[in-house]
Amino acid sequence: MEVILIRHTKVHNPRSVCYGQSDIGLASSFENEKDSILSKLTLTDQFTVYSSPAQRCTRLAETITSTYKVDTRLQEVNFGNWENTPWQDIPLLQLTPWMEDFVTIQPPNGESFQDLHTRVKEFITELQQNDFDKVILITHAGVIRSILCDSLGIPLVNAFRLTIDYGSLSKLIFSDYPPQLKSLNL
Image 1: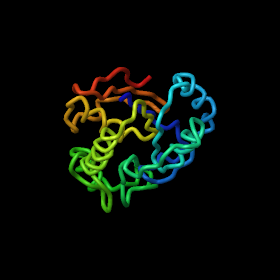
Image 2: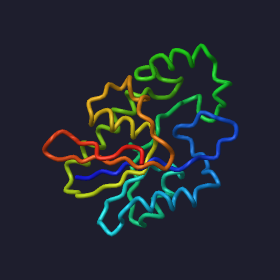
Image 3: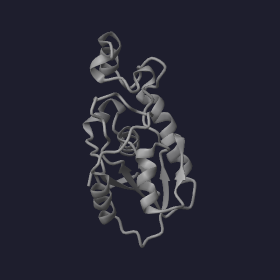
């Protein structure tokens, strides 16, 4: 099974707020970024398309197919009380421990990266049990990092060593062998 991981396009975030599962608007560059993404896809092939429920993902999914499926397990990490708060306004007594151990520490009323990883891994396991040949997942940097770490045996603590640009495509091949990374961050 070929899986293409697409990160949503740039967002409009002039206040530099912390956003994960918050529905934040897209930047004015959406149309150009969308065209760039579409030019990298060969849409003559039959793909099954899944999207995070966030508008920044579904808007892109709609340009690929009207039959995309939404799955909440593809949402970005839930930052809890930090959602929509400017990063500079998050108390350092909360932020510093999380920055030092984002894998296991949860923001207040949020989830850790391990929590995200658990739900994403469940989704990928379920996906592999289907008879799909080609799949597109339109999602977020955290989800893509989680999938790549799990597929390539990278410890979650090293997830942020993977750069996942807005509007980028990465491709994995799942077969009887360990997953293979065919491209990253195109």
